[in-house]
Image (cartoon, rainbow, N blue to C red; front, side, top):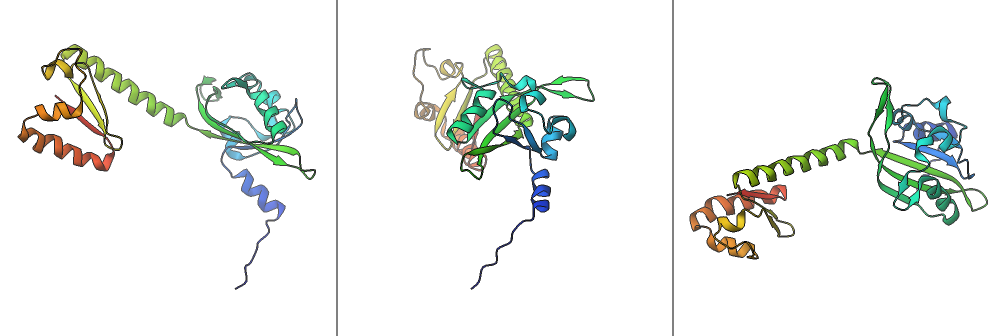
Length: 226
């Protein structure tokens, strides 16, 4: 059986790169880190045109990013580290506000980034492929969930409502403080799931709790209110 290998022409490779998600190629020439290629998606995400960034240093084109910290290291020092070590650097979370042309002002955006070294013909790092993914929607969803949970906890405190949560994958049991007195225990009692289960009426345990538990196996989450 013979294998067939296909070689991409330079033009096809360029088209594929330009259509890739959030990609920009920088020359490994500190302190400039000259932008030599940028995908359509990267340009759109940053609300810039190709002619505005190509041939410019990355921090000349995006001056607001130079002092951004990734842990304890700045964006600039991060690029330098990739060049010096030849190792990839991933940034799981980064806030970078960008200009919204329609609003005429900067809006908060959240990103996941990866800085990937690419060796030149001499075997040394000659370029950095920077890939960014817009995770603003994901972050806003998490914030909305946290806000909703916070409101629920505030409502529980105001009304005496007790809430407990069971992660069916880890059997991690969490509950609001109101649950302890509802089950007739003193505030210092260390409440366990088995203790609550022993105090629930068998009919409720069968018809409500157990039923909810098995339904939660499909969602991975189990909530119960008392």
